[in-house]
Length: 259
Length: 266
Image (cartoon, rainbow over the protein chains, first blue to last red):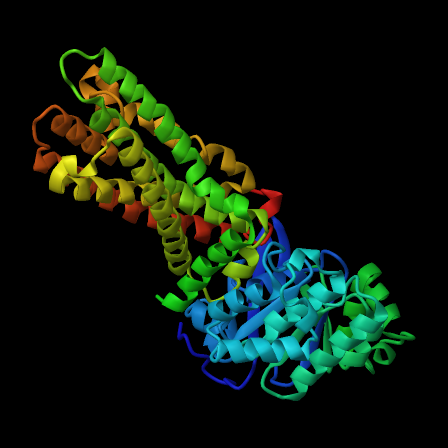
């Protein structure tokens, strides 16, 4: 297999036929999708649908059984370091070490991601995410909202071509969540990279995402514009569609196939 | 190999050390305790001894060198445990850092802490109990190098176990040096061991060092060929330990254990 993506190398992310089973259970069963630069794609689905398993495979901490992942045209399997240097992530279950200060964490992870002009980038991130007051505080002493801002500052340090966000606004108050969404939209607006976002907040998804993928039992069940997809499936809103995906995935699959 | 990324691993340990004095104190507190206990013990043994044999280089020197190897090993494992305790494996292994860069960072961190421990031990052992490492002559260098490599090999092997079996593997790791010590002949010649233990000792690089130390302490010389054999074994074990860690990493990435590390699903 070639380390470089043969075509469509301008894509932030190209996932083809991704499959992962644990024992006899398929966690992800043949998922394929793409994320374009500047695009925010929502990866949605009920708990256990395979979202975090998919993201783990995109981060290289879980090897797929089959399938391929190309980040910015580089094969994750063939050139892991090069592919991962073009990505970054923030997830509720991957907090930065709480026993290091904010600026220490930014420096350490900036070095890991090979950020050029690191000191300058750290200062920019500190200003952008309003962390000046917190820079010498240990991350473990910060509130959820403050930690999310630090995680996001770390995730954007290397100007990623692919930003992976696993429930970045979970457990945040509405005001902080709104700020975080604004930062992510601003990042996507710069067109330097694409965003893959998981969330259980359908209002947020509708507001932020350009496209959504509904996962159910490890497969992509639906795909489309979050502002029109619910109507296309005769649901009142995205939340109702989400509930339907969670409770009656087979009927939706039937509709999709009939369409 | 990207040295900046390895430096990031080292820098994290430096920040942790700087951030909490208890980490700094543990670099030398246990070795100080060891040197004090064994320093007085050798003084006592020298007083009982009428044949003129000097126990300081034979026993205290051996304790110092054994502690040096143990500190090298613990320097690596402690740095790795910090990542386990703070659930940081996901952040590190989802970054461009390779397993070799991670290991190099751990080794660099271990060298820096071990050198501080070694300096404190040397000051104490020479200042208060009259130990002179120069008494080993030029052999001091191969002794130190073999023990250094053995400590690295043990440390990397132990971190591989921790990656594979999760945070609970810590309990396997702490007693490792104590399990090896009886076979390595730190305090006694290998000839006092039963045959099967002597066979095991032949496969342990430190055993060659401590045999050499005893030979010099008895007024003889340390034979070079066995030491070279010990060195070759130490190099081999270091390489094997690196491969073991890499294999364990591959295993936990395939099985999903890395993504769910603290669940100890293995």
